[in-house]
Length: 124
Image (cartoon, rainbow, N blue to C red; front, side, top):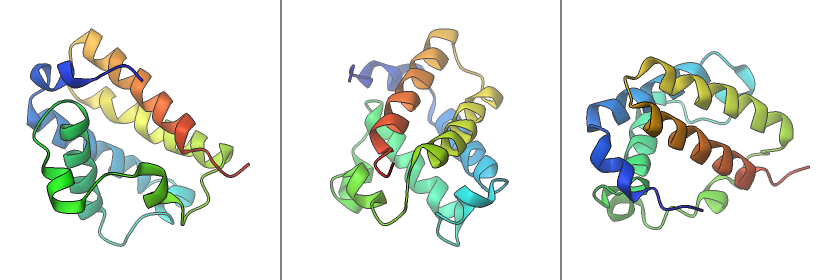
Protein backbone atom coordinates (compact mmCIF):
# COMPACT_ATOMS: atom_id res chain seq x y z
CA UNK A 1 0.00 0.00 0.00
CA UNK A 2 1.33 3.44 -0.91
CA UNK A 3 2.44 5.57 2.02
CA UNK A 4 -0.14 8.14 2.98
CA UNK A 5 2.15 10.06 5.34
CA UNK A 6 2.18 13.10 3.06
CA UNK A 7 -1.58 13.60 3.44
CA UNK A 8 -1.52 14.64 7.10
CA UNK A 9 0.33 17.84 6.27
CA UNK A 10 -2.37 18.68 3.70
CA UNK A 11 -5.43 18.02 5.85
CA UNK A 12 -6.30 20.01 8.93
CA UNK A 13 -7.29 17.91 11.93
CA UNK A 14 -10.73 19.53 11.99
CA UNK A 15 -11.34 18.03 8.54
CA UNK A 16 -10.34 14.58 9.79
CA UNK A 17 -12.73 14.98 12.75
CA UNK A 18 -15.46 16.00 10.33
CA UNK A 19 -14.65 13.02 8.10
CA UNK A 20 -14.91 10.63 11.06
CA UNK A 21 -18.17 12.23 12.21
CA UNK A 22 -19.64 12.04 8.71
CA UNK A 23 -18.66 8.38 8.42
CA UNK A 24 -20.44 7.45 11.64
CA UNK A 25 -23.41 9.60 10.69
CA UNK A 26 -23.68 7.49 7.54
CA UNK A 27 -23.22 4.29 9.57
CA UNK A 28 -26.11 5.28 11.83
CA UNK A 29 -28.38 5.20 8.76
CA UNK A 30 -27.38 1.67 7.71
CA UNK A 31 -28.84 -0.98 10.01
CA UNK A 32 -26.37 -3.67 8.94
CA UNK A 33 -23.38 -1.46 9.77
CA UNK A 34 -24.91 0.02 12.89
CA UNK A 35 -25.09 -3.47 14.37
CA UNK A 36 -21.28 -3.72 14.11
CA UNK A 37 -20.68 -0.61 16.20
CA UNK A 38 -20.52 -0.02 19.89
CA UNK A 39 -23.38 1.90 21.46
CA UNK A 40 -21.37 5.12 21.61
CA UNK A 41 -20.89 6.22 17.99
CA UNK A 42 -19.16 9.38 19.18
CA UNK A 43 -16.44 7.27 20.82
CA UNK A 44 -16.19 5.16 17.65
CA UNK A 45 -15.82 8.33 15.58
CA UNK A 46 -13.06 9.55 17.90
CA UNK A 47 -11.17 6.26 17.53
CA UNK A 48 -11.36 6.30 13.72
CA UNK A 49 -10.31 9.96 13.77
CA UNK A 50 -7.18 9.05 15.78
CA UNK A 51 -6.56 6.11 13.46
CA UNK A 52 -6.76 8.36 10.38
CA UNK A 53 -4.49 10.97 11.97
CA UNK A 54 -1.86 8.31 12.60
CA UNK A 55 -2.30 6.54 9.25
CA UNK A 56 -1.96 9.80 7.35
CA UNK A 57 1.30 10.78 9.07
CA UNK A 58 0.20 12.59 12.22
CA UNK A 59 0.85 11.89 15.88
CA UNK A 60 0.80 8.26 17.04
CA UNK A 61 -1.93 8.88 19.63
CA UNK A 62 -4.03 5.97 18.38
CA UNK A 63 -1.23 3.46 19.03
CA UNK A 64 -0.32 5.14 22.32
CA UNK A 65 -3.89 4.73 23.57
CA UNK A 66 -4.92 1.45 21.93
CA UNK A 67 -1.77 -0.35 20.85
CA UNK A 68 -1.03 -1.49 17.30
CA UNK A 69 -4.07 -1.01 15.08
CA UNK A 70 -4.31 -4.68 13.99
CA UNK A 71 -7.21 -3.68 11.78
CA UNK A 72 -8.40 -7.15 10.76
CA UNK A 73 -7.88 -8.69 14.18
CA UNK A 74 -9.85 -5.90 15.91
CA UNK A 75 -12.74 -6.46 13.49
CA UNK A 76 -12.62 -10.27 13.33
CA UNK A 77 -15.52 -10.60 15.77
CA UNK A 78 -17.88 -9.23 13.13
CA UNK A 79 -18.77 -10.83 9.83
CA UNK A 80 -17.31 -8.50 7.22
CA UNK A 81 -18.22 -10.11 3.91
CA UNK A 82 -18.68 -8.63 0.44
CA UNK A 83 -22.19 -7.43 1.35
CA UNK A 84 -20.86 -5.58 4.41
CA UNK A 85 -18.03 -4.23 2.27
CA UNK A 86 -20.60 -2.53 0.04
CA UNK A 87 -22.37 -0.99 3.04
CA UNK A 88 -19.04 0.17 4.52
CA UNK A 89 -17.89 1.61 1.19
CA UNK A 90 -21.15 3.51 0.75
CA UNK A 91 -20.68 5.10 4.17
CA UNK A 92 -16.97 5.79 3.76
CA UNK A 93 -17.22 7.13 0.22
CA UNK A 94 -19.92 9.61 1.22
CA UNK A 95 -18.09 10.82 4.33
CA UNK A 96 -15.48 12.98 2.51
CA UNK A 97 -18.09 14.56 0.24
CA UNK A 98 -19.08 17.00 2.99
CA UNK A 99 -15.49 17.90 3.90
CA UNK A 100 -13.54 20.56 2.04
CA UNK A 101 -10.47 18.71 0.74
CA UNK A 102 -8.09 19.32 -2.12
CA UNK A 103 -9.01 17.16 -5.10
CA UNK A 104 -5.77 15.13 -4.94
CA UNK A 105 -6.23 14.51 -1.21
CA UNK A 106 -9.84 13.44 -1.74
CA UNK A 107 -8.81 11.01 -4.47
CA UNK A 108 -5.97 9.54 -2.38
CA UNK A 109 -8.35 9.02 0.55
CA UNK A 110 -10.91 7.26 -1.64
CA UNK A 111 -8.21 5.02 -3.07
CA UNK A 112 -7.04 4.20 0.46
CA UNK A 113 -10.61 3.46 1.65
CA UNK A 114 -11.08 0.99 -1.21
CA UNK A 115 -7.85 -0.78 -0.26
CA UNK A 116 -8.97 -0.96 3.39
CA UNK A 117 -12.39 -2.34 2.43
CA UNK A 118 -10.76 -5.00 0.27
CA UNK A 119 -8.38 -5.98 3.05
CA UNK A 120 -11.19 -6.13 5.60
CA UNK A 121 -13.37 -8.51 3.54
CA UNK A 122 -12.56 -11.86 5.08
CA UNK A 123 -15.87 -13.76 5.28
CA UNK A 124 -17.10 -14.92 1.89
